[in-house]
Length: 299
Image (cartoon, rainbow, N blue to C red; front, side):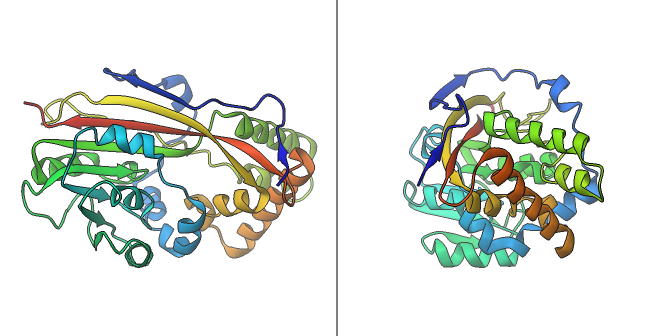
């Protein structure tokens, strides 16, 4: 494949740890409107409709992040909101007993088929089908933000053994990375230049205005200690088909009508080909980022 650099877009792999998390960037997050409870529920339930595509195009967290979350040698680990098993695949290589909890039957069917080494069970982070003190670690990969945090924290505390780990990781294309920044700039230019039909609307629909907060917040009174934070960044070379496939796994795209989704995908293809030169076998380095948080039951 041909790789398109698109300027100085290289990003070295980095690992950073901080014992005390920094406050969220309110300037950045305030611009992104929060999802209503109803819309959040719709989105969290949407992924099963694209389960096969999700399994194919959505990568899990990097092995480095999983190793950091599981600094000890746990025997039993719970994967919350396991989806099609992106994190589960990495866990079964490290842990003898992996329990994957996923509420959506379609997602869980793919998980059970592709990762038979794990025990796939129907359940929710707020209502775990597990006994008290039965796990050494409870992890959530790009799923914690879909849960009721107060209830999920209570359930995690219930099922964890003494000194057990609660961890959350969010991984995917870095919204502040060079590729998405260039795409955003091109979309903005198209909105300014094109007043015909609904082309500006189609262009803006490619990127979700609701930005996920990638932080594990431990409220006062919780049985968990202040979490540690770890960041891992890397580059992934993707071609147009892989980028379009990845786009189709996001909830705001899944929930579109078929006609609107078809128009948005066509606009994305046009943007990649005409604006960024990513067509055919040409690949572009997309910056990825994983934010990992871990804590333990406070002693």
